[in-house]
Length: 235
Image (cartoon, rainbow, N blue to C red; front, top):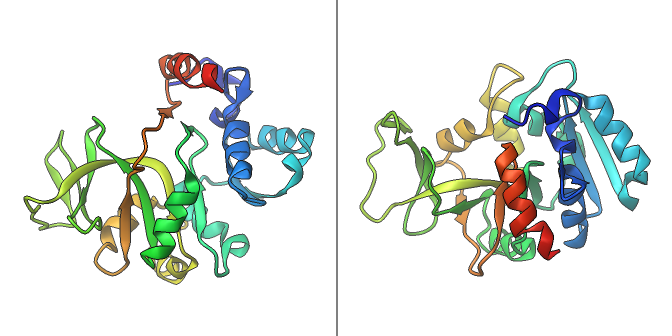
């Protein structure tokens, strides 16, 4: 959807306001006190590696989880990076194509205060696929309103459930890794089905910032223009 911009570079290096999306995200994380980052690479992975090198790793520790031989999708990618992520601290997972300015500190605080296994950025936004978030802010299911599909199979939505869209930022505790490791017989799998299948076993919470914030999914040419007009111009 970003062609021709991605004909010679990965989506993470597409520029918004003259700056690569990956740089926007890394600097945002650094501004929130993050000093160690893992980057998953696949398409044009060598260009990601070279880009980070020319930036001197942005002055922090950056690991490259190389998926150039096989793209592992969101779940398999997290599991492959486990050797750098295991420990006692929450892990922020931030899609490289999401440009946003909400306070990550507050999301991390809620994650810790709730003793959650996973906390998902969610919003009341128009899409076709939604999470069911109950009145206690816990994930209970998923639906595709275009097809009527609901997961887990047999889940009956409650009147108090909120239909909220995922925002491409999530926090996970290392407690999920053993469950994640047993989840799929294949190395490649998506994290969303894992969350849905395990929502009654793990404590998976939704998080919506209390303050007004900007959020842009840089997935189309038009969205770049909107982000440059509404977001970048105010930086």
